[in-house]
Length: 216
Image (cartoon, rainbow, N blue to C red; front, side, top):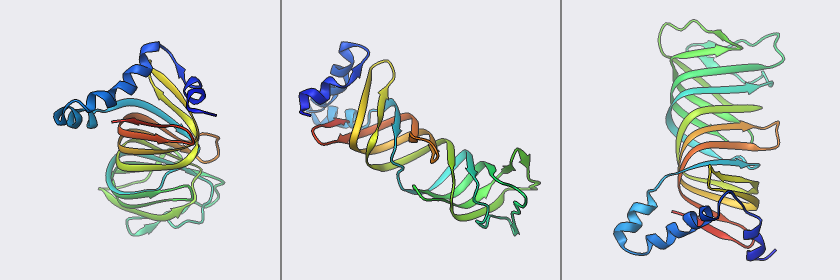
């Protein structure tokens, strides 16, 4: 497929939408001042992608929800080991988390403190913020209500980019690089979409077989 055919496959809700996104780069070239302004511009965007990125960072998160059915992973809460006996699957909601978070396509790890922890909608009795720690939890789903991530890379895959009310672009064996991402993340390892993001991005590049599009 050549570039013209690739661009024709983009679904655009209005003719001006494509021009708005592509002309941002032209504005950047006018002056160095304009370039600095445009490079920091944040764009509301939804991303669906079948590739799950690798993330490791120190962070503060209001709410993390984890779904899993592998109950062999040791989950430490304070000085105790969380017992999940006689369960086929579990959902843990962690509120006001402060610490280290890492996840990828294989597992998720946490090492930090939480103000509230619920297991299958039953709150654990915590007198104060408690330490929670586990490594390489084999999860089926992960939901984060809001997170900021710098320099995020998603390996080649398929999906969709949506700028609400402006543009919808279908990704086909494309690679994404995002300078800054701010918003909610949902990962469904049992589903077809895999990674879903809804929020703001800046310095986004899409590199595919026949197209490289920069929004910065």
